[in-house]
Amino acid sequence: MAEEERRGRTTTEVVSEELQERGKELTQERLDTNARREVLLRVKDLNVTLFTEDGALPAITSLSFEMRKGETLAVVGESGCGKSMTALSIMGLLPTPPAKVTNGSIELSGVDMVKLSNEEMRHYRGNKIGMIFQEPMTSLNPVMTAGKQIREGILVHNPKMSKKEADARALEMIKLVGIPAPEKVFKSYPHELSGGMRQRIMIAMALACQPSLLICDEPTTALDVTIQAQILQLIDRMRDELGTAVMLITHDMGVVSEMADWVLVMYAGHKVEYTLAPELFTNPLHPYSRGLIDSIPSLDNAVDTLYAIPGNVPMLSEMPKGCPFHPRCPFAKDICCKQAPEMLPVDGDENHLVACWKYRKGWGE
Ligand SMILES: Nc1ncnc2c1ncn2[C@@H]1O[C@H](COP(=O)(O)OP(=O)(O)OP(=O)(O)O)[C@@H](O)[C@H]1O
Ligand code: SF4
Ligand SMILES: [Mg+2]
Image (cartoon, rainbow, N blue to C red):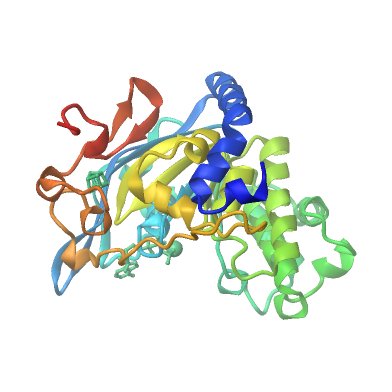
């Protein structure tokens, strides 16, 4: 497309046009693969409430979604939209008090984890679910060598394994995550390693027990761009080789377009759009999703109008009535301020759900 023609248009328009044909193919490919995969995680009508001095505040409202084995679900939204709260709910690691699951279920392979005791949940964490956080130093023990930390994790979940076997497995994991000089790193303390190496150790720890679900909460935000790409490739390779389902929480829509099968767009603790990644990029329906995509800086300067969504995510104590996005939405009408839209398929497409009145009968009348 001529440079001239591309100017003056939004990122959504440019991306949409460029991906249109390939996007349809990719969507179909992913749907075909999806149909063959077994459902691993089923979150249904999840509500998380924060009990604070200001009263009971809704951190997560009626959140439902599914994840299948070996697929990557990206969870996106601005800061404070409830992405980490969603991850922590699944891990059974909500900061309680003030946060508590007040409704709904989180089923992993058919077991509702909301009903598990702390002891049972500890068994699930690590064994079935692994988590990688933004800052590895917060989850690594500074006075234990990297190899020993991985070994301890393996032994907690495999009490019958000998130390020697666990050491061998730990070393194997260090090699698997692409660390050069693995024997040396095995004996190193976290402070002796670079940020990228520490992140790899955390991934090795998370994967050592071969969890069926790996939750990555902004796993590369603190790293420089080259290391970022390597870590993301590593996560993707693990998904491919071990069949791990990956929940990828990120601010970076570029990463989403590269890695995700499905995308869950969250706004102020609500799910607002849920669809396959190629479909989201070619046909974003919710005005908030469109805003997020239009806010992607374009590398080739093809887009003149780099968009910034006006306003801010509301404070939980000041949640607007009706559609939570209405104070920032250029399309808002009366109904939007009064009644929250339900999450429904658009044009009967069960693989593209959106919570917006714009796509309901009678909107244009
Ligand atoms: N420990 C806590 N106590 C009280 N409120 C909290 C706590 N943790 C998070 N919140 C609130 O819960 C809401 C959701 O926060 P959450 O951390 O899930 O956002 P996020 O989408 O992960 O944001 P970010 O992109 O900045 O990580 C926010 O309004 C936040 O202020
Ligand atoms: S429901 Fe209304 S306010 Fe909310 S996103 Fe849709 S058009 Fe905008
Ligand atoms: Mg977060």
